[in-house]
Image (cartoon, rainbow, N blue to C red):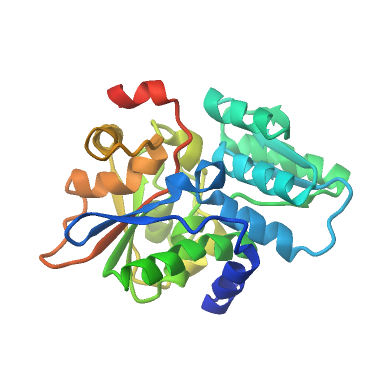
Amino acid sequence: MTTVTHDDVLAAAGRISGLALRTPVLEVSPGVYFKLETLQHSGSFKVRGAFNRILSAGELPGSGVIAASGGNHGLAVAYAARDLGVRAEIFVPEVTSPVKVAGLEALRAHITQTGAIYSEAAEAAAKRAAETGALVVHAYDQGEVVAGQGTVGLEITEQTGGVDTILVAVGGGGLAAGVTIGSPAARIVAVEPEGIPTLHDALRAGQPVPVPVRGVAADALGATQLGNVAFEVLSSTRVSSVLVSDEAIVAARRQLWRRHRVAVEHAGATAYAALTSGGYRAEAGERVAVVLCGANTDPATLAIG
């Protein structure tokens, strides 16, 4: 089992400094903060883990890097690869939004769209990697990727002076695990769509188990089961799982735009949905940070949710 430590997150922060952005934190009401990973390169936190994985590998093969993704991870790997001057081959499922496919094309990645869901695209990518020898950059289940995502937690602590609770969306669990390691003093509330309960079901079963993949956030949170690294971290800490409905996610996304003029995709609104729907109720005086994790969406859809 891969163990990721706080020192690994600190090392990742040094490694990716100047490559990934130190995104701002905005206090939107007393004691409630947004961590705006929506402003990160490629539109999501994923670029942190992508840079750390690639830079940790040393000399890269001539075939470059390869990744499977619902969209955001692929965009991050393509961005990091372009920035570092290496070839990127990205496999995405048919459910991936046209906005994300267009983004991959703009980054000049070599794109293969195959399979109905992420896991099927991942199988195709693994087969291709075995043929070419390209460096695999996993969407969530690699120690270097988790450590890179953990820099979000480091920054939240530094920028707020420390919060009591951090709300973070979960798909494969790489971000939640990284934030848990990067912000060890904070309580982590992992927020999942009801239609993709990867952490919820893993905690109940005592191990990662397959779950259905459905709902409005499936293109970004559509892992069929929690990653092993994430389970190792999240099952041994104070993390709690909160499930939210698609209706709550849609309403939270609409509120983020109408009230704060923050544009997010549905996955990016999932953590906030726990607050707006009452799935998580903060206590009096509690300081809460919400990670708004992704902005790769069609702006025309913001007014309608």
